[in-house]
Length: 93
Image (tube, rainbow, N blue to C red):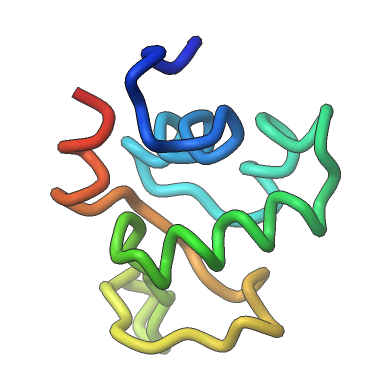
């Protein structure tokens, strides 16, 4: 999906936010978005979206339930799931 011309997001940021309407992990984001960019570019963009509050990290607990996490280890993004926040959704509309 092409981003609107008046969007403040880069195309890859737009693509990642669109994929995160539903919860995804880094591997699936790389598979769906990274075919052009590569794993490390996707991870760097994802970190930026997390810092801006556009994406929420989530972690699987010992009980197997995936819950929101308010901290994340930027060196181990593979351990997390991600979903767009309300603020991120506002930018997509």
